[in-house]
Length: 210
Image (cartoon, rainbow, N blue to C red):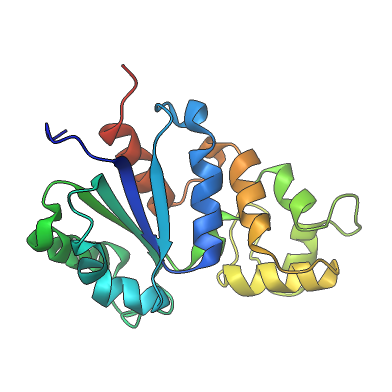
């Protein structure tokens, strides 16, 4: 890390409240992440996914001397470049950040297609937090019957739609707190999403335990 004394460790810029709550939940589990407890701030870009894509470098430029690192997190779905790969979009934004004061101190996480893809692990906490504990049929069977899931070991092709319909069927209100509760409880090893793995690996590389 640079010898400069920064006020805080990481500034996160995210596309919406759901991602913010997810990051909050993840960071609370610093022991599971195998990192020290960090000082962080999380800001929501007013332009949401497309705002993160096109305006992260402007938003974060004034913060380069306050935080050791910056991380931008948004969905590929809705960013306006859905035809591009997750990796291509990440590289594009990382290059902009590097040219605007964050060289060697930034990472961009593009969730493909959207945040809800992180929700659909095989953890029993998913059924619990979505209001499906003890229901018959169980959640995955219900999703398969409605063509929202190919098989019990797969993830929905439209993860956000599947989550919203599951909550509606269970008469559970939508709430960003659900994302934080899942992030606090679901084992990190259960989430094999590439974007999540990049987030986890990057933070560990930035802040290894002594």
